[in-house]
Image (cartoon, one colour):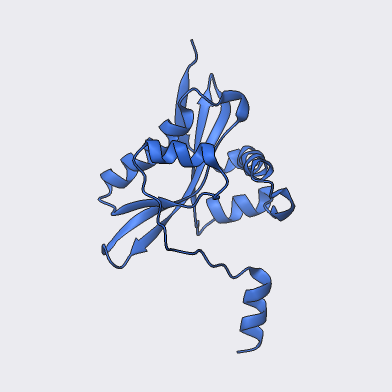
Length: 161
């Protein structure tokens, strides 16, 4: 029988987090976009001013998945919330309910803090993830389009202001 646990990630976990980031990028066919490094993870997740948080899932002390998230704020609800940036379980450990347990841990955090929402994005072709989320009662936000300014666009806009 396996021993499953979830804990908050520590700075020493940066290389494990990077492996999961690379794993999700590979699954989403976006490996060419990964710029994450151990140093960046240490700085922005565990530095003096952290911008995100991470939960790690373990089976028998072996890391099997992660949930990386940050806090946001809804003006309409007038409460903070959680934005789930990435949820990933190693393919060798899927089907055991570990992804659900990670997500439910975030939901519990939202409840304990009286947050108004837990939100995330999913690629429209990722049917297994869509089925998983909708099976939990998540509602797709149809009619909304995600926009992004990447680092190059930020540089261009700030240079030409």
